[in-house]
Image: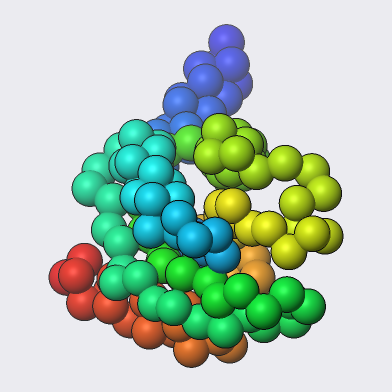
Length: 145
């Protein structure tokens, strides 16, 4: 009985931990501003506190054969959701924005949401080398103080 109670409370306490999550947002459509605005609305719903967003930056494609520039932004949200749930939510948001399988091979990035880091654990180390990611994270850290 004591072990069951302890398991329950550990599970309950673990579920209530707030995670700080950084997400990369990008689009290369002519309507990229609208796509980023849509992503911000969905991410604000996903966040359990105030969601923060860096200033959007236009960048040239990196490791992408198509010439269309990207509009990029970084988001910082907090949530008690499990990381796997957040990943599923990001994929759902991409689909709701119109992203389809095979679009990227045709040079179309309607909306791209990349899980960059959770609680300081980096998921996409190569992305952290990109200047727009570093600038966005710096901006968000200053906003979050």
